[in-house]
Structure formats: structure tokens, C-alpha cells
View 1 (tube, rainbow, N blue to C red):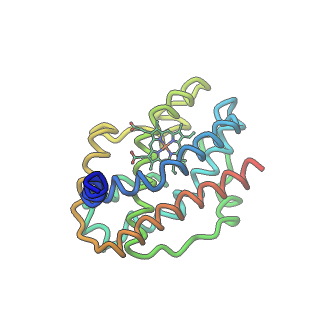
View 2 (cartoon, helix red, strand yellow):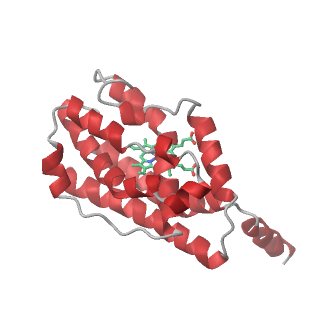
Length: 200
Ligand code: HEM
């Protein structure tokens, strides 16, 4: 009984970022493994497919990075947006963007689900250190072909800390937190579908 109370207390004091992580860790790990089985860093052609997956995701969430309501909560959102980096990376690899844009259906993301989508996107940059190392082994860099995997000027850790601090400062009811978590699940689902369709 005491143990039970203790556990409940622990759950109650989790921050939103911690809840998002707890709820999506299994999904993340399964996605990570699936992507790696597709050998996205085997050569430039495979890497271009990985970029196509990333592009679908970043195109879907780009409107959030200039959403006035979200800008009040995260002032540095415009600097965090990576869609233009992805466009450059695709052009570096001579991939036609117009062909790609035509195939993508954009989701309608409302608030507070948008907080979960942002969590997934910003978190993916934290884990991108490993991906950038793999990209470098096939001749790419933060300046060519893999600019979207580069860390923020203040560093990945600091950038993540600033984002989660702002996220955790937002006052949300329990119900709204659930909607934010649903948003993170939807974000991972979109990436998962993109992996399945792009890598066939
Ligand atoms: C092969 C692909 C991937 C690998 C190897 C990978 C690896 C990692 C690693 C190592 C971390 C922890 C970083 C740290 O704590 O310092 C991480 C965090 C994270 N990654 Fe990935 N990742 C991959 C793909 C993705 C994708 C495609 C997404 C979503 C679009 C994503 C979303 C996240 C999120 C949200 C976190 C933060 C989790 C948290 O601490 O709350 N990852 N990833």
C-alpha cells in the first residue's frame, strides 16, 4: 500500500517531457531499429531515401515552427525549424523536391497535440548525433547533405534542455497532457508510415 502510494506520487510529479518520453520510448526504439534495418547509411542512394522520410516529417510540422501561439511558448522556434536544411540536403543529393511534395498529405495539427509533435521533432535532433556520425562515413557533413542533422549552435544538450524547460513550464490539465501525448504518438506514426512507404 505504501509502495503503491509512492509509485502514484512519482507518476504525479513527472514533467510533461518525462511523460512523453515514457509513453513513446518503445515506439521510438522500434522505429530506430526499423530504420537501421533499411541500411540508410549504406550509400548515397539509401541515404536519399532516409532524407525523403525526414522530409515528409519536417514538411508536416513546418507550420508549427511559425505558429504565433506556439511562438509565445517557445520564442526560438523559427531558429529550430529544419525544413530548409532538409531541402538543401535533398538538393545536395540531386533529389527533385517537386516530385516529392506532390505525394505528401499534410496532417492538421491543433493545440495541444502540437506540443507532442514538437517534442518528437526536437528530440530527434538530440539523437541525431549518432546519425550524423554515420552520414559522415559516406562523405556527408553538417555543410553538405546532412545539414539537418547538425547540432544547434548552443549544442544538442543545451538546446534540448531549453526546449524541455519551456515545454514543462506550460500549464496543461491532465486531459490536455493526454492530447499532447496523442500528438507525439501521431508524429511517430507519420514517420513510421513514411519509412514503410519510402523504403517499401
Ligand atoms: C535510426 C534512427 C534513430 C536513432 C539511432 C536514434 C537514436 C536516438 C538516441 C541515441 C537518443 C537519445 C539521445 C540522448 O539522450 O542523448 C534519441 C532520442 C530521441 N529520438 Fe531518436 N533516433 C533515431 C530516429 C528517430 C526518429 C526518426 C525520431 C522522430 C522523428 C526520433 C525521436 C527521438 C526523440 C523524441 C528523442 C528524445 C527522447 C527523450 O529523451 O525524451 N528518433 N534518439
